[in-house]
Image (cartoon, rainbow, N blue to C red):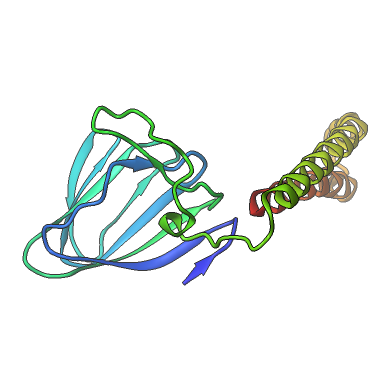
Length: 184
């Protein structure tokens, strides 16, 4: 349905008896909403059977897998956020991490028509831009922190809002740059 660095959401259908390989998401939480049939979830070693209308969450780095129960096709809605490739960390039977970078289609990314050299140059440039953005945000936080403490103590909510908004701008710009870098 939607794939961006901030979220991937979709409907998923699996056949009776089918199961998904144990995996985790290094950065993202995954939310599952069951729409049809019973499913056994194993999340971080805890098992539960969920039915239509129930949901559960696998937090980032929590190993999880599903097994379809019953004789009907399973349908669920799921979302992973953030959805930064590689999105899936596949795990072996003993829980060990397998190689991170599977073919793009295995985590619903698209291949780039650009050369590896161009992508590496772009990644370096984006990393530099992120470092600069983070330095600016840190400086803004340094400049605003004490004044914000003072206006909070004085009760000046209008000035506090202005300073909070200045702090937020640096946070926002940093996340925006991280997402741009992840697209590369």
